Image (cartoon, rainbow, N blue to C red; front, side, top):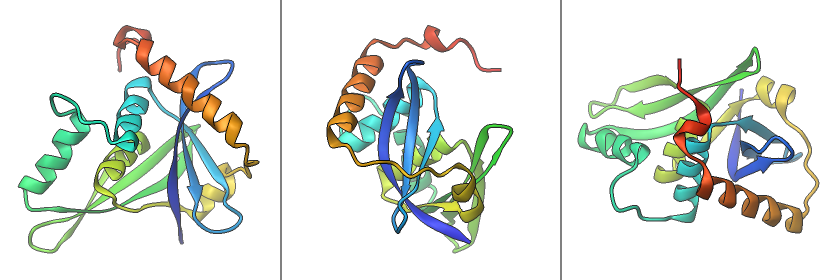
Length: 165
C-alpha cells in the first residue's frame, strides 16, 4: 500500500550542512520522511518550488520536455524502499499508446520532476513506517532553515561534491 506525500521543501541539516528533501504524508499523523540529497538536486527542487524561470532549461526541465515530446504523460512518483541508508524511487509514465512504463530513479530526481509537472508523490507504507518522523510545527525554524539552504545553494559549486562513481 502507498501513502500520498507532499513535498515540504529542501533544507540544510545543521551542523553537517547536508541538504535534505522533506516529504510529508498528506494524512494523519503527517509523518515527515527526510531524504539526504545532493546540492544540485536541492537547487533543482528549490527552483521548481519557487517557480523560477531559468535562461536555459535545467536537466529536469529538459527531461519533462522530452517526456512530452515523446507523447508520454507523467503519472506518479513512488518512493519504494530504504535499503542500506539509500532511498529508491520509481517514476511512472503513461506512454502515448496507453501503456504504463516504470523507470527506476533517484528520489531527488523523481521529486524534481514531480515539482515541475504536478504529478503526485507516494511512498510505500513500510518505508514511511520505517523512516517517517513526527515533526513539530515551528514556522520560524522552518523559515530559518530555508534561508540557510538558499545561502548554501548560492555558494555551492560542483567541486564541493566530488565526482560520481
